[in-house]
Image (cartoon, rainbow, N blue to C red; front, side, top):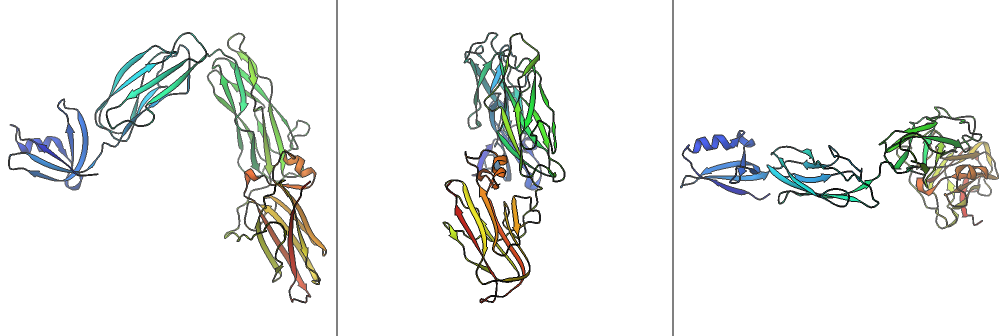
Length: 443
């Protein structure tokens, strides 16, 4: 900030007395307040130099100013009819400002025109409420507009807010805030939010039904869900149903598995006569339960390229071969991935070939983190199918039923990790080789 020089004239009380009144602090922490003709603080600044002029004045060189705050308006998106605001609508000060008078105005079809002034003294951030009352009758589309007029240079964003006036006795709609989520064995609970919109009066209970491979007959096979019925008190905006994953991998069903939640018919237990509860467009939520989550290798593996399709360079080397590739994007969402031995590489002793599709770049100790398969075959070592979520297969259960890996693009990126472990082999090249192959599946 540019240096500002302020001239303070000598008065009858003497220069030293003026300095004692307006200057605070010592050494490098000196500061001065600048006031207008009415004595209102208009700025504060710190300074490192003060000089007396030949005509008896004082020059203060300000190197920084503390007038860095702003004023904004804070208000909810909606208010019921006949509401007298207390702390719902506020003028909010952030940072440090001088003494300030902030004017406010209220107008609109949903409230009477009103205005006023709220004074703020110099200091740190704070807020003060604006008091007004919304109209007593409801009509669709009514609003109140609250605006503030801060002193010049102190306006933040926003300085106005439009509030929709609602009928507290209107019908109520319930819906999940999201359509899907994921959970892993041994991790923290999944908090699933159900929202309430419409009238704010009335107490409702909304049952939660379960289905899917985790609850094929309506009984949960792994983990816990609570509560089975949500209670929405008057003026509540949301409630939460909690799915807690099991601490260990269940014997059934196979993972990943899905739990489909659906909202039942709302029942009003108290409130205005004739007020109805309905389920909105997002009346279901799918939880995908994966195996235990583990950390990725450190450092993670470098990623090779699978190219546009077909065979990949042969993997050769010592008795443990590894490679990592990005899961390919395909037009259909499906691809076949295979790992074959190259010709003339007979293996003696033990052989394990593995493919692991996961979010990690490199093999992890926990094969449940993603999709895993292995083989010790000497001909076609291992083959795995992968899919990215499409309209053809809408759930992990449907994908698992036909032997495909559930790896939706929305939860990626995903990686193909390959590991081949063998004892010995005889080969014309001196080392054994394995060849990754992938191809888009078009049907």
